[in-house]
Image (cartoon, rainbow, N blue to C red):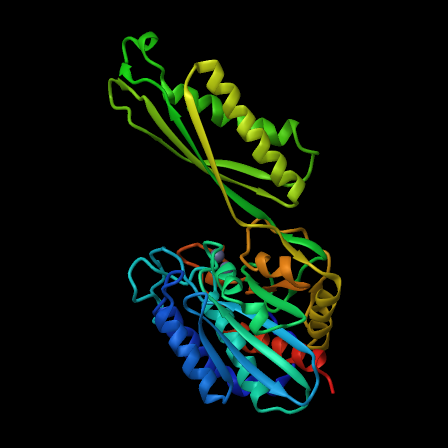
Length: 391
Ligand SMILES: [Zn+2]
Ligand SMILES: [Zn+2]
């Protein structure tokens, strides 16, 4: 096992309770906007702590409110609740019972860590101000944060700053890493619809082979990264589906390409979109076919602001956790981006451990959240609040 970092021992009493809770969530994972059981369990838990609880915000989302003293300071802590459409391959006793659904991103752990902090803080009175514990649905599709914001999250719970955390498999247990500025990439998904002219495979000159047109697009768009963007910006573009109506000896008339691109700043994101459209227009003219392109940008870039991020680092330092303050931005995307666009925000990574399933990548069917991280995470949240709302 990784060497445990030095942390406040105060919350070790929560270990067993948190482990049982996390494993139960892991056994019964639910997809985005379907987190009904999960949401009810969180609701009941917050109620036992005597917190004010508001459910049904952004469909299955909920907010617990803890107030102490007279200070006007308000802090928002966010966890995510949803699972993924993956068949779990682990044979652990807490493996998923919901066939084809799995907590492969550790959101079961994120939720439990935040509940641990809520329990601990609800017993304390060494701070003054308001804590909003936010449990958001549907992070994986980039829709849950927006749904909560559209339901008036920040009007009803006017926090000054927002904080989020995500586990990082393969990094030493409890190691904190992040950076100021962009921490997670944006993701834009796209669909390219090619309408050519089907025909006999022996007489291609009488039709317009949409596979060939699609292939031109697949290779041409990679040139956007190498020739249209400043080198080294880290953007990625991928075609992930190539669907045609062709058959053994039938040239396809219709082809649908699907894919996504990631960018670490809005200039690159806009540039890639513009160039992709231009390439499709050019190839459309070249082959005399109709090409339609549609974009969706549910995940924008997640941006860390200086002040809240320094508060996260300070809390981690107080616990004796190892800290990497200027890590590389990470190429995956985070729904937390929507919060970071509206409020000064901090999003950090916390090591899930370097051994066994804890080191397997996020979204792998063999991944698992490390229960040894639960108390560390809950302690981190508690310390952040105690520092933030210091009397
Ligand atoms: Zn995920
Ligand atoms: Zn995640």
